[in-house]
Image 1 (cartoon, one colour):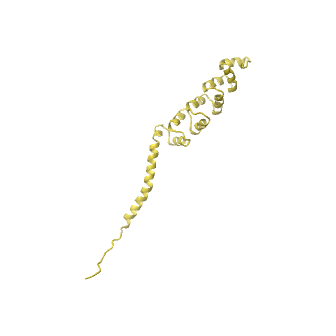
Image 2 (cartoon, helix red, strand yellow):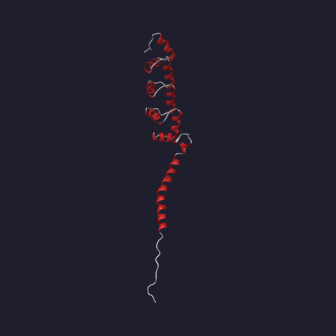
Image 3 (cartoon, one colour):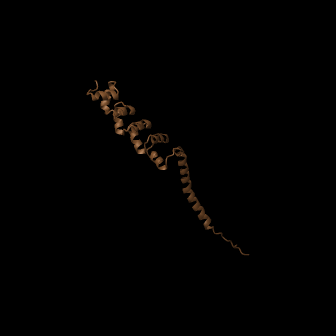
Amino acid sequence: MNKHRNITHRQPIAWPAKLLIIACLAAAFALPYLAGTAWEAYQDRGWASTGMYGYEIDAWKKEGIGVEMAVRWRNGGFQPPHATTWIKHGYDDPEEAAAWKNRGFDLGDSINWKNYGFTAGEAGDWQAQGFYFSEAEEWKKAGIGPAEAAQKKKMGERPPR
């Protein structure tokens, strides 16, 4: 009798092990990527209904402006860097900024008129009569409107003090 048995050793099959390693590596990359993409899509669901293009959405996000405010600023005729400039100068209300812009005032002029106590509509009326903010303020304090002040100014009168 042969004390030694003829034992055959099975060699591990190399290709299934390699395939398993490749699958694990692919999953290690794909799962976080897909989860991140799904999370981003979930967070952007509010932006999707705005009708904005992806590059616009990215620009508003970069400026730190949320969906609702971005829509309001965009409806007022502003784009992200321009809107942010108005916001930094105290215009938190996009409709107010749009009122100034739609009456032909740039940011600097609107700030001056606003600092002298004028709304966009009032400033537009005074400016249409040829007044600057400081002069208009004097007439306004006297209780005289833009049209009457313009007539008095033509006649050489100055605002009462």
